[in-house]
Length: 224
Ligand SMILES: [Zn+2]
Image (cartoon, rainbow, N blue to C red):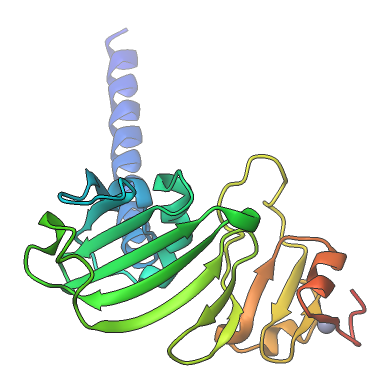
């Protein structure tokens, strides 16, 4: 009897040691990935509400304490915080001292005009001072398609907005791989896919017709 108890405790000991080792080994990998690629609108953005002295009733402001490109998070932000057509949101970034103006339009599936400006001290406390800093860059993004146009460079293209969870349609499976440089679309298994440069490569979750509607041609090798 005593022997059994002894073996039993040895087993528990080995098991718990193994468990603690495996969790210790997997944890750093996870956190590294998180800090590098994850930007969570709900936890990173602190929504503050109305802007003092605003007469339109549509000016809101929010705080962000992390360096992040507004071009990357603006669409997510609008989906989370913008409600009415014509709302203007200021995102004060305390890390890089910028103020981002998000001008939301609900027309045609929604669009957002993003203007990044230099931060002016205490501008969030007065609508008359808000957005008076020097303009750094500006872009408009179509919220439903991800199509964008840069006002300062004249550049246009598509941002990847397909990674968001959208409840209605199944967007979990990659249907095609887009090459934004050649404007061709491929089956994910196509041998040409691995030659596509990282910056030109986009995962696509839509249908063949949607890819064509976006201006893409089917690849001659994989005939998607
Ligand atoms: Zn191909």
